[in-house]
Amino acid sequence: MTAKKTKKAASRKSPKKAAAEMQYHVHLKRGDVGRYVLLPGDPGRVPLIASFFDNAKEVAFNREYRTYTGTVDGIKVSCCSTGIGCPSTAIAVEELIKCGADTFIRIGTCGALQREVKLGDLCITTGAVREEGTTRQYVPLSYPAVADLDVTLALREAARNLRLPAHTGIGHCKDAFFIEDKNIPIREEIDALWNAWYKSNVISTSMESAALFVVSSIRRVRAGEVLATIGLTYDDAPIIAKVGVEEAIRTAIEAIKILDRKAR
Image 1 (spheres, rainbow, N blue to C red):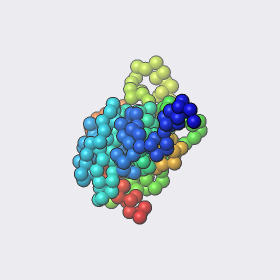
Image 2 (cartoon, rainbow, N blue to C red; image 1 turned 120 degrees about the vertical axis):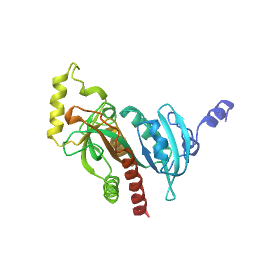
Image 3 (cartoon, one colour; image 1 turned 135 degrees about the vertical axis):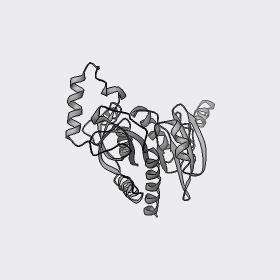
Image 4 (cartoon, helix red, strand yellow; image 1 turned 90 degrees about the horizontal axis):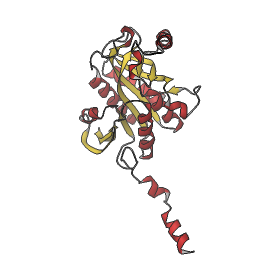
C-alpha cells in the first residue's frame, strides 16, 4: 500500500469511532444521555425539569440546546431543550438519536382550540396537523405526524395517576408564532384554516410536535408530547398565564416510570 493510500485509509472513521463523536449542534456524544429524553423548547426550563431528577448534571449547552442528565428511580434520564419551532427540534431529535436516545417526551406549552380545554389543563397530543415546513422536506404531506402509542398511553395513565386535568387529541403545529395577528396579509385564508381546525376537534396549537413525530417515526424511535395550556386561542388570547408547566413535567416523569416498568 502506498503512503498516500495508507494516509487515506487511516483517515477513514470506523463506525464505532464515528458513533462516539460529538454531535455538531447539541455537543453530545454516546453516553452523555439516557434512552429517555425530555424535550422542552426553552433552555431556561431545563434546570427546572432537571430539579425533578436525582444527581442531575449539566452535560452540554450550545446554542439553543441545553442538556442535563440524571436519574429518576434509578433510570438514566436526560432533558435537552430544542429551541422554538420544527427546524431546531428536528436537529435535536436527529442528533440525540445518534447519541443513543430512543424515547422522547416533549414538555411544552400550547394555546387551546376547544372550549373544554381550560387554562392550566394538560394536552396530550396524539397527532399533529402539519402546517409547518420542516417535515415536508422529509416526507410527503400525506404522511401522518403521529405520536407513539405506548408513550401516549403512558402519558394518559400518568396524568390520571396524578389526578390532573388532561385532554388527549390532535394538535396543530405551525411555524409562525404571530399567525393570530389580525393584520397579516393573508388574514382571510388563515381564518378559514383556524375555523377548519376548530370544527375538526383539534385541541391545541404549538410549534414543535410535527417534527418530533415525523422524525421519530421515520427513525423508528418513540415520541410523545404533553403540553400545558397557557392561552385560549379560541378567545384570541394566545398567552394568558404560564400555568400547568410543573404539572406537565410531573406527568412526563411519571410516564417514563410507567414505560420503564413495562419494558422490564
